[in-house]
Length: 395
Ligand code: NAD
Image (cartoon, rainbow, N blue to C red; front, top):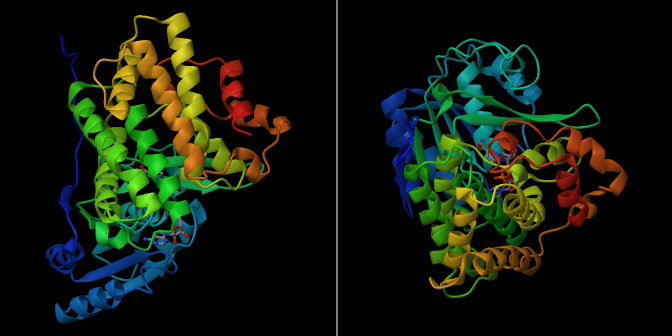
């Protein structure tokens, strides 16, 4: 029996090498005055930037542009809203990694009102209901990891001892168009490919075994995981099949955003929030550093406390997918999955948490702050001791 489920809104998706060239026409269909949000370096230094600017001029569009150089804070979003609120902006274009896309998404959501994003962030502040409207937003990813081009949330971080990493989330924030052009990923260095690739892999894996999973999302997650298996190492290691791997990862990351937005995530993303808030751990690294151990502990906890769980069967199915063999029993397939996650983490030199100054004495703080929305859809409720155990193995 299929349990009832619903699928919330998706952007119109435009995928393929060179599709950045569709953006000027899409912008023109949505307004005459654009706010362009980009990262600090790679895109602006590329020929793509000049081509975009020329095309906007050619279509008579005017624009303001701003730069987001790190994972965005509520202060950055509020400041941008103050600066551009009366600049006649009709449409927002974000071209960059998850940081840029999240900042642009939040700014688009707030420009029509001028309210502080702190009014709406989950788990901090008054958590007022967001009622829109949002300005139309076009998302163009330049990393293959977060899937933010397809999600309804913007992750905002405040760093330091009172830090947090929380979402501004609403269906109205979903991009009008997600333009996924794998050519824009060509400048990603190997450490970024690894961290983002492990983020996408984790998002697909966690949404596949989420307590809210459904067959529609399962199909997407499996499709994405197949492309991760085929493409991530090829792209990371370069060589003949690198471009194919890169396009596969752009697709997988897009799917990971769709699946996470529909059914949520799990313990890795529960941990990524305090890891990123209290320590300078980039989001993708937090995922890559913990996914193997978190998966192993989830599987062990399920085997001990909920052996009939559908998630156990699903972990085995992913193990068989990665092994490329159908006739492997469930226990062996799950062990293979954990082994491959550990191998990939080592092969792509994903740093350990200790590399960011995290010590055993810090673990209680992380455990105490890991039970946000992602942890709630983990396939089994982990004890604090189990969560601490994940972290301890990742130092
Ligand atoms: P990022 O956007 O922070 O970028 C990391 C670095 O890579 C930056 O220095 C950036 O300038 C550079 N970069 C980006 N594209 C490049 C390219 N093509 N070539 C060379 N360098 C490039 O990293 P990210 O991992 O894409 O995004 C992380 C953020 O996304 C975090 O804040 C995380 O919490 C958030 N996130 C959001 C969602 C969501 O659903 N909204 C999901 C997962 C993660």
